[in-house]
Amino acid sequence: MNEKLKNINHSKIIIKVCHVCYRLNESYKEPLKCQHCHKSFLPLNYFYKVHDQSIRHEELFAEGHELHEEDLVKGIYVLW
View 1 (tube, helix red, strand yellow):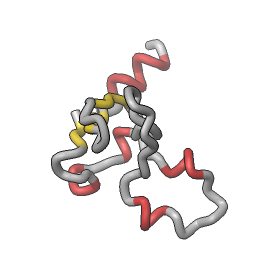
View 2 (view 1 turned 135 degrees about the horizontal axis):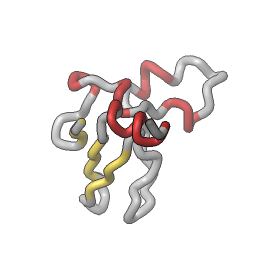
View 3 (view 1 turned 180 degrees about the vertical axis):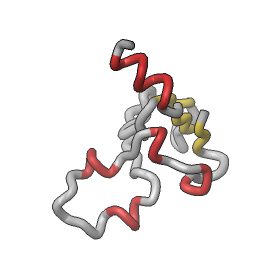
View 4 (view 1 turned 90 degrees about the horizontal axis):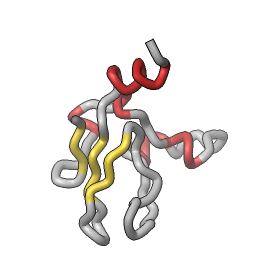
């Protein structure tokens, strides 16, 4: 099976509403920026992750399969 298809079948899609332009952003990984207005986003569980200064900002964003329903901000995120 193709590696891309294997990842797509096992990953959840993250749907996030931009709090600036109210557009939907869909991705298999938490979006770094809005695809429409380019507003930067913080990762989910940001304050739990930032204590390790050796991790780059881009590495703080999780894949869809790494997230759980209780990690999401209600009304802004959906896992599909």
